[in-house]
Image (tube, rainbow, N blue to C red):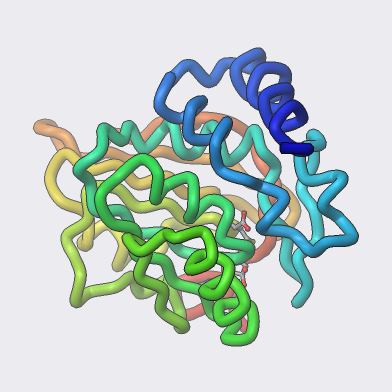
Length: 213
Ligand code: SAH
């Protein structure tokens, strides 16, 4: 296929070469067709080292960011994962290849409906998508083994921590509207462990426990 070579190069040059080691993550990113998650006019740039516009003022995350965030979740295959900020659905599709069930929340209804169609076309039937404010989590489906937030908020949305099971990982960008730190929290035996994984730059997390809308 015409994008296969570009995708392999993306994984080798942008993801593996910059420190992502988890073989399952590398394999998933080598198989998920990233170009299917952007509009046709941008498909030739789908494997470039950048984020891209997806409409509605939002972006598909940078490939390396997706690699780092996914690796930080430490998925082994059986997990239930909550994603806040579905956007293009690309990160959702990578997660769907690596765990049992993905629950994803997007606040923009037209974007969510467009993405649902793409996820269905890709045969990703282990993805449940909800339209709404993800900063309050998805209580009915909690607890989750891992939670990932793909938009940057001023602080950790508090409800998310209470929806994480013991031993679970929560990966979230926290900072001002300009730049954030990608933080991993883990509920361990001795309480909550926190670790900064990288500096990053995400679109804003809006909502009750995010920036004011
Ligand atoms: N992982 C996505 C990132 C898209 S950008 C991708 O790679 O395509 C972040 C997304 O978060 C946007 O679509 C934005 O609308 C959404 N978002 C922002 N605040 C939100 C909230 N409170 N709840 C759910 N989605 C939110």
